[in-house]
Image (cartoon, rainbow, N blue to C red; front, side, top):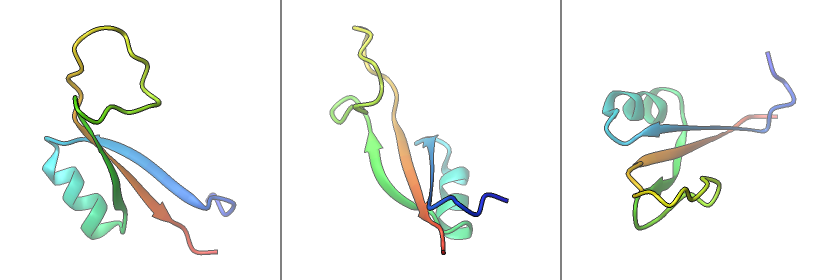
Length: 64
């Protein structure tokens, strides 16, 4: 449906273990980052509040 797509990227919370299993083992995504209070997402704006988000970023390289 999107033939010009080279890399699919998505994020999911770390507590969603079924989603993580599905994306990695069934869909072929790779975990490329884990964001938490000690490793903050540089694209997430710093609001001054305590950082509570813990999530994974996945990528999948699409075949040409």
